[in-house]
Amino acid sequence: MSQHPPIKPVNMGNNVYLIDLLEQDTPCRSAAYVLLGDRPTLIETGSAKSHQTLLAGMAACGLQPQDLAYVIVTHVHLDHAGGAGQIMEKAPNATLVVHPRGARHMVDPSRLWNGALQVYGQALSTLFGEMIPIPESRVLIRKDSETLDIGSRILTFYDTPGHAKHHFTILDPVSDAVFSGDALGIRYRTCFTNWPFEWIMPSTSPIDFDPEAVQTTVAKLQQLPFQWVYHTHFGRSSKQEALMNTESGALAMAAFMKQFYHPQVTADEVMTGLTEWVHHDLTERGFSASVKDIRQALAMDLPLDALGLMYWIENLKS
Image (tube, rainbow, N blue to C red; front, side):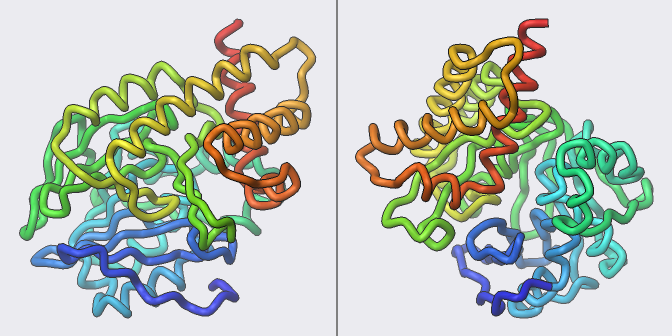
C-alpha cells in the first residue's frame, strides 16, 4: 500500500467516484472510477501495488469487493489492469470486461509480463507488483459498439487504438462522458506536477503507438455525444480539449521523431530530444517550466514515450 495518506474519493456526479490509486506513491497519477447503482462497476484497477489503496477507496464509497458486478479495464497495461487478478479474487460476483485483444493476457498474463520485463527490467515487480491470472469463465469481451447494461446506465464500448491495440473507450450517457484510459492522452494535473497550469499530452509508450490510429480514434470519438473525458491519468477534461490536444500532440511527436531519427539513435538521445520538445511545446502554449522541472515531473513517462516513438519509427522504416 502507498506510504502517502489515503485521499478521499472525489464525487464526479451521477454516482461516479474517482479513487486516487496513488500509483508509484504519487497523488494525481492514476485513477480508478467507481459507478454506483444496481450493479456496481469498477473501471480500472491500477497495478497490484495499488490494490490496498483501491480497496480503501472503494470502502470510502460504501462499496466492498463482493458488491461488484463488473470490473472493466480500458486496456491491459500494468498501471491499468495489473491488479485485476487481485480484485477479482476478492470480488466473487464480478465479471471482468476487457477488449478482445486483451482478454488472453488477463487469463494468462505470462506473455504480457515478459513484454513488460523487456521495458522495465528487474524493476518490474518493484514498480507494479505481481499479476494473478483470471479464469476465462469470468472474462467478458466487448467488441466495438457493443453495450453493457449495469442497471443504472448502459455503457457502450468503442475500439480506440493509437496508444494500444487492445484499448477501448467507454461511453456513459448518464455522466455525459467517456472513460478514456490512455486513448485521449494524459492530463498532467497541478496536484501531480505542482505547476500552476495543466495540459494534455499523448502517451506514446511502447509498443503500439500509431499517430494515424490516434487520428482515427479522435475522429470516431468526435462523432459521439458526450461533454467530458475521464482520464485514468488523471481526472476530467472537456471533450474538445482532450480531442484536440491528443491529435495535435500525437502528430507533433511523430513529426519530431521523424526529424530526430537516425539509424544509430539511442533511447537516451530520444528522451533528451523529447524533453526539449516538451519544453518548446509548453512555451508555445504560454506555460513556463524548465527542462530540469520537466525531466523531474515526467521522469516515469519520458523514457517510455521515447521507447514508444523509437519502436514506431523503426517499424515504419523497416
